[in-house]
Length: 266
Length: 294
Image 1 (cartoon, rainbow over the protein chains, first blue to last red):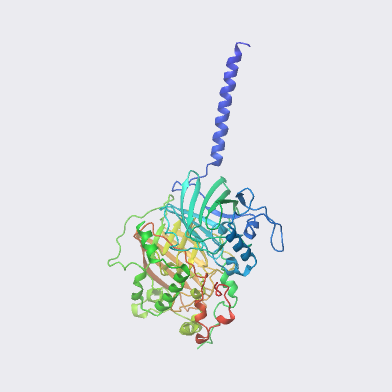
Image 2: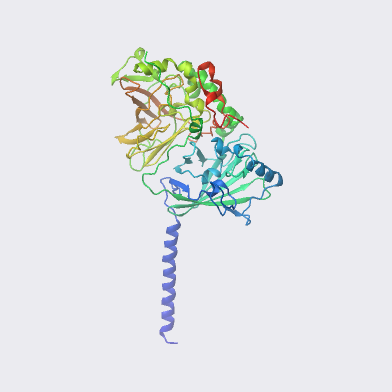
């Protein structure tokens, strides 16, 4: 061991520490989203799930006519299957046998979390006390209120998209959604949730400037034997001309009602 | 919390029922005088608001974020006309300058009630969605950042998002219930010009109409932080012989946390089925997927 060795070792150590600090601060910068004028992590923009498969079936499924295959979006339980109670599983099978009962086929509000992985874009807008999620699908707007953390009482009201309250936890937006309508379908395959005992807890995390990791945990002892969690990724629309247009489903379904048939001039 | 409890008590009814009740109210009010509608908004201020400071964005532009009411009758928009063809009109001379065909269409409103767009759960259109009835705390909520402004209304879930610094118009072939609104600043006045409208929406529940050639130019001018003046000018060569302009006070709501509640209309709507043969409608031939309720 030369006399210089300890000095060299110390220099290497210092360099390593310095490098580590530089790298970790760079990493921290990468993961730390921009803040808006309210000091909130900035989720504004137009977003959309890239994969249409969960809209058709959130469980693992092979392709069929008109439906792309999908690996499923359920991360917990590890089986990737919804932990239904026997009665809720029977309801799912009944739903699947009766696709005309699908709220989506009737232009109804799709419910949360289904709204978040529809094949339609949505725009997130933030105020100091309110985050809105403005979906192109039948003017569905989610109001996530930041100024309260309570809900209506159980069974007092039923909302298709639920009553959403939220808060920022570090760089994440987390919500608590309650007061659901009983007849929500989670996909086009009859998977369902809803009713006064359902609670949905969401977490929006920017993993880079243009990608949100979206996670939602569904808890309902009436329908599920355990809480279960889905995860999808939401991608930012980068075309600067992109804007939310309209899909007014029931207007197109009615088909015959357009501009008025003009009367004869008097 | 307090407003929450109040909302909870008032609306411990299923949203579907609420929307039906709401539509019944629309019809009831459609023929009522404007003064009967004060239940939906704060009483009009006695004295004109005093000029004062306003909230501003980081770029210095006025910040309209918050909840508001604009004091326009949902039953008869013509009661608020201040100019026709750019010339001031007296209070007893207020009338929309219809072309003959659209005057006839307006006169036939009673027998054309089936065409009333909100009966079908369509969004209300520009600009009248701004002053539709509010069921819970907030009727109109505005969100704003430096790039765009968002108008959200509870009734029918009507919504529009307008850029604030111009944008290319969308193609003429695309028609939107809420039109294509593009904003700009003229000093402190926000100007939004809305094109690409449909000819389907009505201007009020009384049956005042427009064609799909309608262009609406709105002006939001601050007076103080709680008061703006609102103006909308209507140009539509197919429906009107001249431009016409309405004006109304715009007042900030007293509760900054007032909320909009979900408006379920399609989900169980059967109102349009009540306007069939007896009013010359054709709903039998126009099945709505929402009409066969489970």
